[in-house]
Length: 241
Image (cartoon, rainbow, N blue to C red; front, side):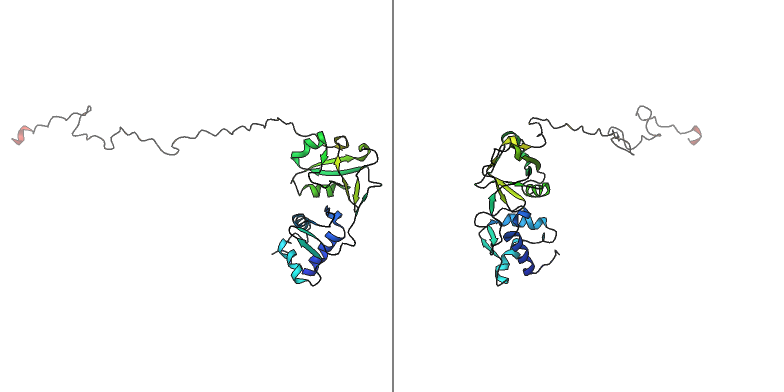
């Protein structure tokens, strides 16, 4: 059985994650404060005290708690009280190095062409490698860590924003700003594994081979000769006559 928590405890945890410090967990709500429920469940799975939480207990809070701290709209969820939710602000003094963990399939493309958000949002960067790796593992079990050098970013940091204390956002990221490990060769041939040579075993270990042409019954010594012919009948002695 997983760890049991009360609805009140779960409600306080969700209120903190969704309404106060989502940046600590690598979550970036949309302008209305919503995040995908699946992203929230991944956050719960990463927390030792909340990895047992599933969607059903979260939805049940609306029926159990009189002042429910969450609002659900389809596949989206947000905090009911968003007065303490951080806002996106222009990044005035970001750290010189930021980090992002990308999927292995996007590794080479990121180093060659840079990064662009696939949706209408922004590229999400973290100021800590641990947080960047945490976000990257939600898309790939073994992401590749890349470093972003803001000294190489276009002067004035156009479109660069800060969300909370740990998250930074930009519309796109030129390849000149990104460094990381080199991608594997595109046409690298996999190493051929040698098959182990099996030891030669006897066909019939511990036995003998039967000869189908051999008669199972030996020839009678008194009826047949060496060549298989019948011996002449022995004459009775003269004293019997």
